[in-house]
Amino acid sequence: MAEKVEVKELEDVVVRFSGDSGDGMQLAGNIFSTVSATVGNGISTFPDYPADIRAPQGSLTGVSGFQVHVGEGKVYTPGDKCDVLVAMNAAALKTQYRYAKPTATIIIDTDAFGPNDLKKAEFTTDDYLGEMGIDPDRVVACPLTTMVKQCLTDQGMDNKSVLKCRNMFAVGLVCWLFNRDLNLVAQFLREKFAKKPAIAEANIKVVRAGYDYGANTHASTPGTYRIESRQKVPGRYMDITGNKATAYGLIAAAEKAGLRLYLGSYPITPATDILHELSKHKSLGVITVQAEDELAAAASAVGAAFAGALAATSTSGPGICLKSEAMNLAVIDELPLVVIDVQRGGPSTGLPTKSEQTDLLQVLYGRNGESPMPVIAATSPTDCFDAAYMAAKIALEHVTPVVLLTDAFIANGSAAWRLPDINQLPDIHPHVATPQQKDHYTPYERDPETKARYWAIPGQEGYTHILGGLEKDEHTGAISTDPANHNLMVHERAEKVALIPVPDLEVEGDKDDAELLIVGFGSTYGHLHSAMDQLRQKGHKVALAQFKYVNPLPRNTAQVLGSYDKVVVAEQNLGQLAAVLRAKIDGFVPYQYNEVKGQPFVVADLVNNFEEIIQKA
Image (cartoon, rainbow, N blue to C red; front, side, top):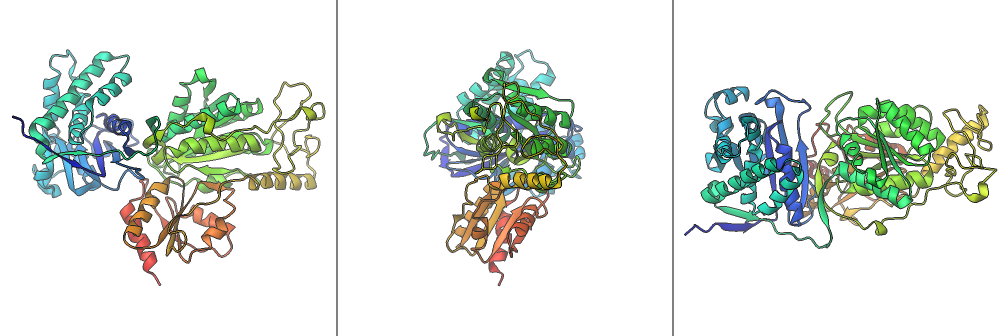
């Protein structure tokens, strides 16, 4: 009779998969997160991989990681440290152990800890666990590679193909540890490898072998764990990355506005997946062009906007530098354009695969002349859908280019997303020229309330007009160098952006009597919210205000920030939002918390820092 294994209930768990760049850790993490989302758990993921195309095998610089935080309810961050660390080789253990809790279970492939592997990972002795101070009782040490080879002996696969299945053994072992349904894993693999069914079945066989290994040996643990779902909102859910959500948001906006969607883009990490995703949807009328460079990509999108499409261009910080000339053309032409900046570490090439918030001042002010643009910052992977949709709505209704800021953390990270009903999304009414303007249309006639000009589509009789990079006369649209006219046009372009209605800044937590107000923008929302929750659990009165709309600022910004004695602005840069707020709000002098590490905030560090501020006289 089999020994009964105890099943313990957990509120949440953090699992980190790590190994060589070619070990399939991103796929392993995606499978575990997708299966967890499918059963209704809240998830948050953090892919953490090197910029090297293919670092030397077994090297410390070539380690790729994928962290998954699974919870019974809403999950705000991928977690500071993991409860389970999968280390596929010695280098992974050496570099990733710092992300493990002291009580973490560590799964290693002993076949990848030979003398040469230890040397590459810069271990000085054969006792690698003792050298790192790891308790052997917390380590599940198994000859993973050997068992995978034995599992697939009858599949007729070459050695290289067999070794590519090693990650699936780790997936199976983790699925056993957390009571995951292997049928869901099998479904995922059969869909992913639909054109290679033999590969799919081989991977499924290895997953089951890993699961059985855990079940038969109990994998050095006293039992397994289950995380129940407390999902309160019924609907269809999927595990979605921020880049995919951004693509879907643009598609939904084009559908709602009754327009074709055009994306002009040039491949750049970490924004390329938006181009990849949109290129799959020609059936929905989406047009994608991979241009020869960043400026051409943006210029083609400006042309598409002039021609009457919902136009977008996607890039990261270095590409924004190169697109700035075309972005400025869209400003002076007053054309609807969505510019997506998936921020990464800089300056220059910087840290291509790491995340920062260092482009804020660039998208606000990094163009010649007075060049105002609305700026929206998405707060999570799932919020990328809403942020992209609203960026398109503002662009079309106010006839202006709009910048959407995301970053590598939320663009590559994923969460469980409830598919929206498109009928429930806000209507989009492009601000187009009216029939009454026919035959006397001029391009810079404006709506007196919003200052938005009327967008006329070329080729329509009676709406002939010219746009371009030279300043135009307000009344005729002809080229003008008149000083008074230029002064007027500069003010009207600025006023148009300032008049765009955006939601009020919301305050969460102890909004009426907080000792400290935490302020952030964009993707740091989850970490700052978690820090607020932990501080409140410790008995402190703390509130949070997270900016999603940075230009124009919400109308109640000064009122909110002036209502608290202590305010800390926390950013993954050297204080760019704090500088903007100080410039916009008289007498505002906040505390600041700034990190530029290319990594997400650590909630424990936030809590310690904010607690020190609270305790200051």
